[in-house]
Figure 1 (cartoon, rainbow, N blue to C red):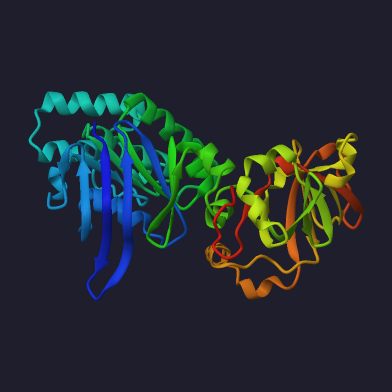
Figure 2: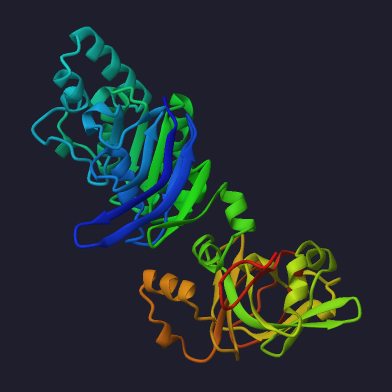
Length: 395
């Protein structure tokens, strides 16, 4: 096993096309780190730089204590798992898993031991004499994992290995990969476009945008303390709601005026975010997670100054929870960060109109019907605040 260190790493293709800028990142020995971000953000390029499939044009890349900028892929002691499995169709499962070991001219007894052990761990023992075409997608992915495991490398590199699986199998495989990594304790770098995958699998998650790392932290901290609008909007499902608001002070209280709704902010939260004092009377962006709303009918003791009135649009009943969709007469928040998030979702900012759309996650036992008026209480101690010009979190 080994740590992986990026020190001011950059990547520029011939012709001056820069895809990676000033990446500083230390992945600890045995850590499971996930690189996540929109398509084209550079996450796969970073992974391929670790593997030696892409040249490091700036900075220094280390695996363990060794600088590997000029080390060939075969000498880096890493194993890579691709999204398309990359199995040899004419070989059996055993031969696919053993192929790399045979190339190294490893003794037959050692090959049998390693393949047998990996097959046991991955529950592939009864499939060793089958060929890939006789396997399901999940089984093929296990074979690809097994081929990496038998190498006993210093690090595993995984490039969207679950993207070709159906939704149910993806959920199953991500838990299996997580448990397998914990059992083996091998340093793992995992690339995905799916933020739910990132949040459920990684010990730490690095969120990327346009070749730069925006924030690296535990999944929980990314969710609770995003550094900017981009991270806040990318992490979370359903996504964080954003609305323009003006901060107003009245005595010891601070209010956020959002599209005509004047909501009193939690005093403790305001005190903890000392920089908010600099924004009184100014327009900012307020971020509200869907679960920060609740129906007043479910919280009879709610402070009337922390409630808003809405006209219910679509209602989604999921059994254990419900989602209410509604709009507010306020121009949608459209910043460079938000534009990029919308583009990644296939949405044109110009199509948003002049209203801001909201999603609230509420108690399913009190859910109103579409078209009805409802009152929602806002959990103001957990609101997020952002500078509308820079996109940075206000703390």
